[in-house]
Length: 278
Image (cartoon, rainbow, N blue to C red; front, side, top):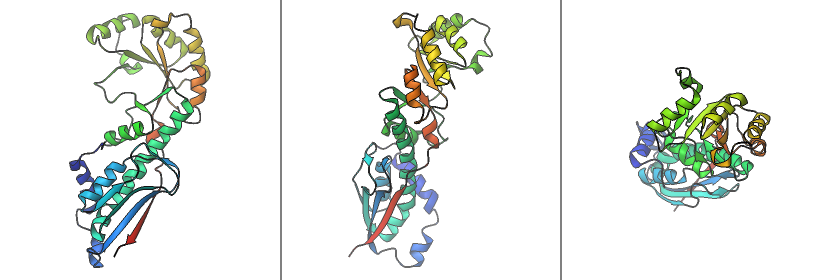
């Protein structure tokens, strides 16, 4: 499934080729037949290969997909290939390569955190680069993660910045939210174990432990052991969660890992090779 439709993909192409391919046409190469390969330079979780294939088709080439988004590619493995005129291949080449490299970077980083979490869900936030949400969501899912929230209208997440304006008690606040949105679970972001305990006692469904150390998560988990299981809130460790510390948060008792780290992961390197055809 593609995250970007043809209109969006054509917009990406237009951004690069609005004035045409000056070099290819000036060299008189436009009509020469050729083929092209995308290969992984290193181990990666592939993403956006479907979009890349469609970019080549929209530019007038034919393309074949070897690895779908979510596939694990080893170094040197073929991701896709395309054939057509030199002009059509050059039109889509860089846009397609950049998209696969960037999205595969997010997918691979997500997969790394998922592997370290060893079965505990990894949820990515909405702190993706503006304008990239659709592809960012696809990349997170390709890496085995889930979305924490897609936008403001999807979930109830009470920040300290909301509570600044409130005069009600935690229990009164939760009652108001449940009355207004009876189908929704209520997530409350907290900054220390004491605050976590107050909102747990008030009946929050999920406590988002913002920038807690693994030791603070463990203390919070210990403090909530006295709560009966049905009313015990889930603990979501958030802020600073990465592949190198995910296991520590899981061991501390986090029920869910919330992270933005994949969005700033370096792109993966895709090797592009042009070949002449008869």
